Image (cartoon, rainbow, N blue to C red; front, top):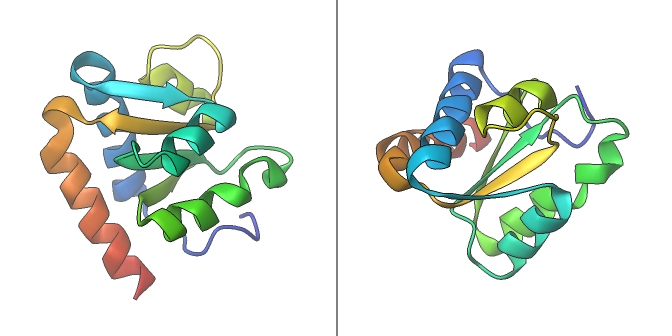
Length: 121
């Protein structure tokens, strides 16, 4: 686990995050990659950020939790950058995604947000 992870994401929550990414791919809008994610959060357009824990070096994503906290954007970690890439329809791994429009995934996004808030307490 990276030193930058403030809490361990339960498997159930990670699975919901992957599902949300798949739903957003079909009915919403996603930004992928650390630079695009950073811009989306800074511009206030990100609904939720999903990051992979297996990114090496972890410093690549180190700034994202801080800007998410600053902008009040929910963020969650998933175990695999390869699986995160697959969930949004890529053949390549991706370190992070920002979901701009959750589309039909709004209920799942709300569930994740509430679970993350409960974990941080």
